[in-house]
Image (tube, rainbow, N blue to C red):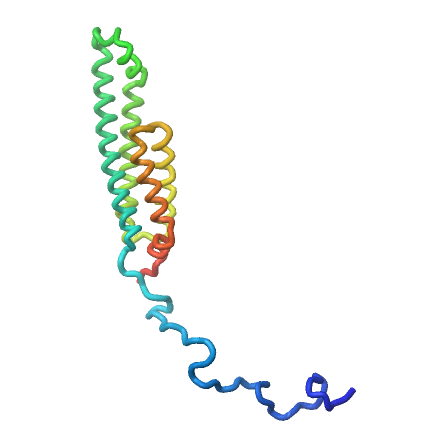
Length: 187
């Protein structure tokens, strides 16, 4: 075993060598660039205005609310009309009316109540866009997906608008801008 080998870990300690032991001073302009300045609370810059896609999703939620209110009115009018017309003797022989009368007025009132509840849910979500956190984002995603599915199955023609709006809401809230907006720090 020779102590003369400078790479021998068991040898006697050598004198201070360049690049070994203590960090060396570097000339300015070499190495990694300086980090950007840190925000006042340790994070990056604080987002103060809602991104355009998130704002568009909120507007689309308000459009869905308007369509839901229109649906409530149509279901309520249909339920009242069917209930009033069931006792009409002339319509008892009409096959088209009997097909409509197969839906009970109670079921049409149930559709009206469901549409009203769905509208109230959309209103709550749209109002919470300014102050809500990631929970509002996830709830809006679930709401939009269920709205898109309901727009496809029972109400194909009328629900097409709901489906398109709901898909856009889900995309706009689920993208990176939506995540940044709903996960922003609130102080």
